[in-house]
Image (cartoon, rainbow over all chains, first blue to last red; front, side, top):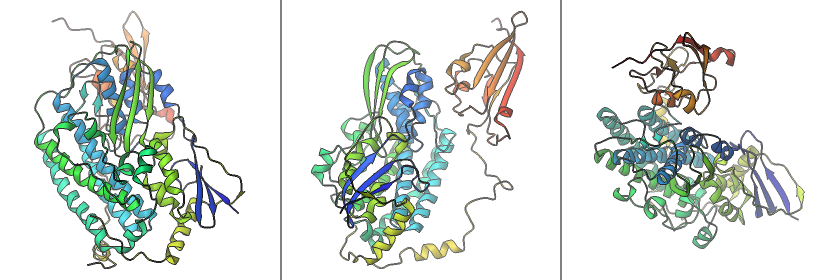
Length: 400
Length: 129
């Protein structure tokens, strides 16, 4: 007999509203169903009623964690439509903020992964280190979350020498801490054993289901918009695309730790080679008629903005495809044939941002069956209990 | 070598450390120099070009005419709607800027209607050069 377990949509333990329905057979998930639409805010309609300059701040508020991702994606698109060439210094500052944001997002995710795996001290340490990045961002842009550094035609604030030295000093501390977390895997067998083999997504499935970002790269596909379709002078900056072949949550952790280390290198390169000159050019208020697609590698994956202009100072249509939406079909594949105890870990591993993804999409695969309600908290407790009874995986190697 | 308890030395060090958080109402953290706090208007400098009203994404700035003959205007800044993006400061065309943003972040009031700031002023005429 199969049982359907609903999780969400409204529960204090679930950070954002989403409904997950699992059809289970005993301990094993046979089918998963994700239902969206609980956090729809009508942002795309709001875009149509505001001018291009006002829309920068609306785009920033699509998501709190990747606020710079959405504005850069939007602003790059508008600049492409108007045929504007931004100064090199502005592009470098955009890269700097983008990489700082990537570090802050990945450290946050590492903490969440630690929390879901029952390793709460790891969660507290990574979140403490994240404060350092937040302080740097506040110093440069004037705010911890909404940096508002982008404008059409460049960036709004320049950085000076004292800020540069401050960032480099903070980076030293961060690099040391990240190296410590990298070594942690080789020494903490319980953490590695919990993550390994959970949420398998094969290379073929990852490509077929259009997974994006670290989820895709953890399945061994080296795809990164920064390398494949460079924007904002990324083609001049040396860095590597991090991949992993383990195809599970452990691989996703490894990819993220490596990406954070790559980001430190990028920031150091950017600060050392920051070109002199202006940070912005004057942009016209009206944008010529046309349409464009702008791509951006957000911390969670590829972010796409489609902008259609009708020649006035307001866009006719703006469509946002956030990375989380791209990862939902892959999540269903990951959950299938997994255990109930692994649901929080697998779902957290795509770094879901529901408010980003609430546009228009439906994934439906509903099976009838009796219903049993389990809250997310109960599920987490159950996950910890379940882990005690399973046999310990002894020969798992930390791939770093 | 693999051994459990890699984190234990780190945990023991932290038992003897001071808390990272501060005792907020009694002790305050300093905000950086460029922090975007509350928006202010310097009425003596304003030329009523309405750029700030036009570009404010939250529609938090309202300019109305009090008296056409005396060139008297009223500007209302709705701090309850303000999203602290400082776009109004950026578009202000006067030198020095009539709109400014300070580092004040404690703006809580018992009612959102108390967060409205009103300025009634006579328009500054453009200086002939």
